[in-house]
Image (cartoon, rainbow, N blue to C red; front, side):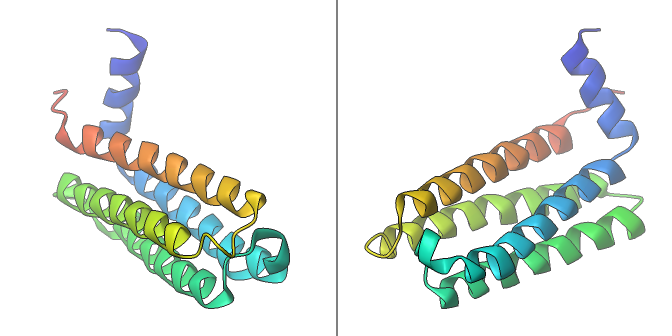
Length: 136
């Protein structure tokens, strides 16, 4: 078995870990958007209302992922697909909000949101792949 298949097999044996990773990432996004970028708004340029909105969504996703990590034992694949779809939807929303507010954004703001979108998209695609695999 190659290393990638072994990694996926380990993740399917402990699916709570991916929910924890997702939840911690969403918590980090909540903190960065809701506190750091708000405090440094002039460096990033995104309006505070948009940052609060995105931070609220990220906090809801964090709560969902943590509930799944600690409460879901069966049908974890279904719940993982849900958060993956939410994550991809969040990326699309963020892209449109960046586009709609591009006149306010600084280069640092564009870089931050681009990196956030890339990281979350990679995580969501990994979650979809993991939820779809049957490595038994």
